[in-house]
Every structure is written in structure tokens, then in C-alpha cells.
Image 1 (cartoon, rainbow, N blue to C red):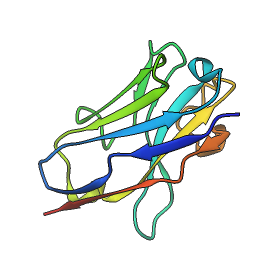
Image 2: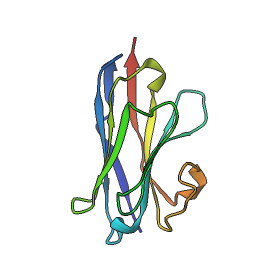
Image 3: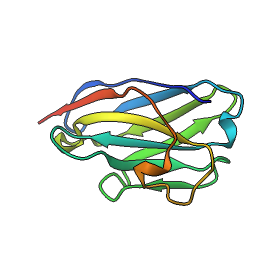
Image 4: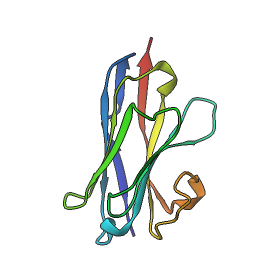
Length: 125
């Protein structure tokens, strides 16, 4: 069982940066596929980024490629989302997610078994 807690959200002006952190509990964290999703106001939850259990592979949604970077520190049981060049359309609640089985469907929200409570990111123009 893995429990996830996000932090690092807040308010930022367009063009600014934020780094989100996801703290995980559980002994087998290092074997999990980890992902970030977001849910803008009034919209569906959408894929942002994912990182394989080894950290060797990373994946990004088209809207964040080149601006966001996902990384993990298994020793500290942390997953990060570095967000640069933020835009007003990045405003959303951001969720950390974990998949025990390392599915290849990394961009599918139904792949993930565990979710954090979310952290709000607001980007003003």
C-alpha cells in the first residue's frame, strides 16, 4: 500500500516556476510507475507526466513538453514535478499517482492505483 501527499502548489505569475513534490510511504515505492495528472476547473483530469520505476523513462503530455520535468528520488521516496514557463492554462489541481504494476498505459488515469489529495496551482496572466 502506498500513500501519497503532494506539496508545493501555490500562486505564480505567467512565465514563473514552481516545483511540486509528492511524498510517498510504503516499502516498495521504488518499483512503482509514478505519474502527475491535473484537473483544471470544470474539466476532466488529464495526464501531465510519468516516470518509470527505474527513472530511466519519462513521459509528458503534449501541452507541457519542454516546460515540465518529472524526476524521482527513491531513497527519499519523493517524486518531483518541476514546472517552468507556466501559463494561465496550467491552472489546475495537480495530483500525484502511483501504479504498482508498471503499466505501459502511463497516460491513462485508470492505470493508477493510488492518488494523493491534490495541490492547487494557480497561474495569473
